Length: 387
Image 1 (tube, rainbow, N blue to C red):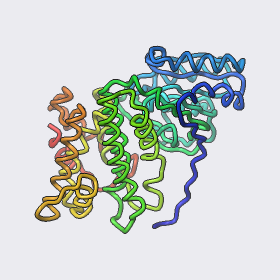
Image 2 (image 1 turned 30 degrees about the vertical axis):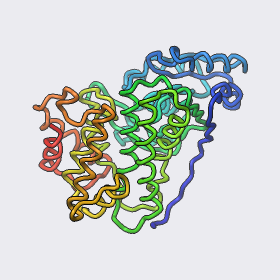
Image 3 (image 1 turned 90 degrees about the vertical axis):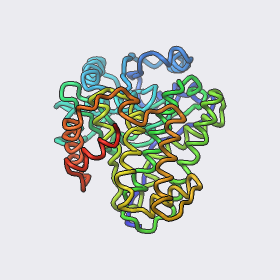
Image 4 (image 1 turned 60 degrees about the vertical axis):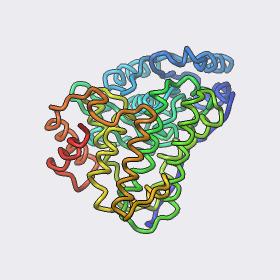
């Protein structure tokens, strides 16, 4: 393994009933906060009432900022920055899934910056400081509750960029599995796809040295996410299924699986961000379309690795490594279908005629994220496999 540093400064508070503790924890970070959330699902499932009650019991002053989209957008972030600056808040509380947490991080960074917060996303500026961010997770998928990552869409330019910065690690994240009981079947599926992609991106792209710790963690996480997803799709209020999924998704993208690994990159996310920017498609849905196509195009560059995935995750063996690899790719694609996530442009209602423009967007992110080995021709070939 290469040399590395591993530090997660986020305090995790996990378990049923823990949302009621947000007030005492929040009291340590100031007296005025902004509560960021989405389109109102937390008011339907009871999470909102628990949060507000706990904050009021601690006599905390807060303002609310709802309306975060499933693909958070720059214009809403800018409005949030203006409001938070005007109200002079001390910290941000995100109540929701990865999109809400990502937007809260953007607001927290933008409040401490005189320029356009988009500068952080396009790589023209670096964060020097950010307000503290606390989170209450309601949709497990992105691990944004336990990492320094954030993703944002610029509606005007049709760009969806993301980056990771140590200033953006949440100070505290409360994970109550009961808060996820009301997630719809489709977003349960999308969350599972996203978590699996987070785990496998580095697994398939690293330099192929011997990383048994990391690779076996990935294989275990993928099997666990699949198992727990099938449990909760049948019984949405299965506590252990929801708890297992929640923790597995956090571990899939908190740095654990790629620490000490050389050469890991995130090509499937590179493609999926472009689909999200162009069509406002759910991130997990974009990944379930891209991932099997990318795997089919790339597996021959490392047949043995894909064959190991097939054998160790699905228990499949072919007549030779090539056949074993292909059966695993097909098995993953079929599982995406089984849980109701799209596996083609047709499934998602995406037009076929945009491949040229999409490929330019993919290459733009490849350059920004320094992902090597992609040309316009092979990007178009991968996108064509999605049709």
